[in-house]
Length: 212
Length: 212
Image (cartoon, rainbow over all chains, first blue to last red):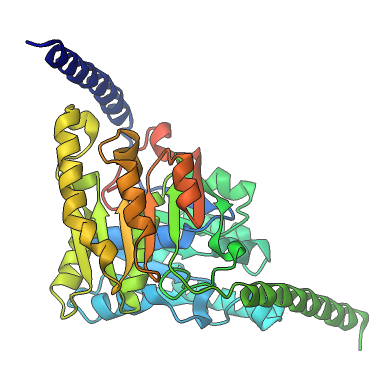
């Protein structure tokens, strides 16, 4: 064997050893995590990607054949790519896997009426509340819920109670900026999306398909 | 009018004024952002939700009728909810909107061979490279690309060049932990997902539909 071949074999061996150690760490962590139950995931922060992440996970659940409920608290007045695709492909298909609830008033700085927003938020909450009693629903996505709580359009104790009393295997995803400490306490997984850089601030126009 | 009614009217008026101010700020920011072009979005950090976010945005683009290319660099050996749903609903439907590329070797600590991983990464990169010359593809999702770059399975200059020379209106999303400074420089939008809390660390088992 030449020196080069020996070097290359040594390198492959070191890589294999490092990856074997890594595998043992990963496998041990997987073995330790043995509690089977649904989780509450909160995605907050000022960065881009929170709602998209919730919709991506909903897609993944649908892909596995699970039932999903999506409750959209803000984008009701926007044209909405996710809804087009989900309704076109799932509602028209054979599978009634998806329940979809949308609050129809748009952003609170568009309506400019707290009373009107509050009534709309309460209406959609009442419509969707049964999903927290349905063990067949694997995932409930509460998209942009934080604003409803922070503006006090929804009573936080009522929301927390519905989530805490849900079926044991049901998962909940909550998205929106400014999630408060009580949501961190409620969450099993809490991710904060930090905007390091945003195209919008560099003068790039919001785009169909990317921003909405 | 009673005192209570006056208070309530004053409160509604103050809310309306605050929201009007907010609307003016939002509208002015929208007016300033007038450059129309595709963007590069990087989602990095150790928190949950990066790939899901990329898939959610892909879903949104599909919902608007755009063509999308998804290149998945790591989850090839996992059963994959997104792929089930996307292939079932889009490939079987009338619309050939989606191109899907998957690297077949799984996690690098599963194969434990850098050479094998490198060959697999290069193969999928060669297969997908034409999408960066196709102006009809509105979004390219490079899922878990950062690992390929950090392990040097793909040549970063080649990857950066393909992205920089892409059609003007094409968008690119890159996901994965540990995105380096050159990806921040390349990005228009760079979000870091921070894990404040994770169910897995509290002993909750990874779940179908949620984790994969």
